[in-house]
Image 1 (cartoon, rainbow, N blue to C red):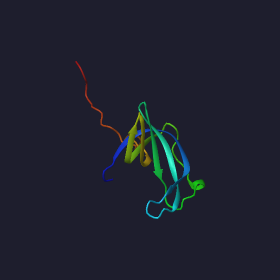
Image 2: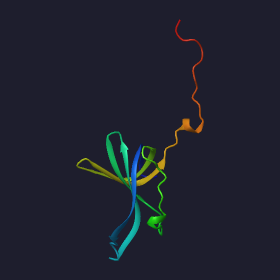
Image 3: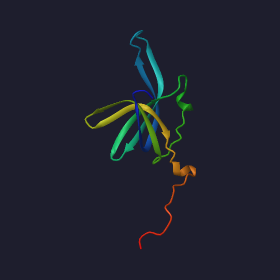
Image 4: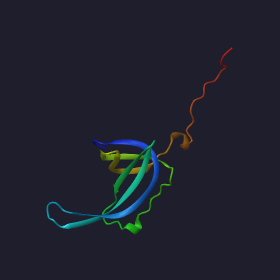
Length: 113
């Protein structure tokens, strides 16, 4: 991902909606579905806009995250104004290495005297 960054946050909610705009070159009105998520990073809520595949219908969009899930936010672009942080990017579920059965080494031997 050139020029972007990632962050791990807590998923709060999502909403699928149609966005409308006018093409700058042709002047033709355009529309496309988009997901709007809210993700929390500590005490800061971030509004995330995620594009969906062209031709996708809103009724076919299903979000698989649950409130409180740890998610990875891949940020493509972000803005911050008057305390409101918003960005464009995508979310994916965070998989802890520990949840995949990985074990951490434990020190053996007697400690202290």
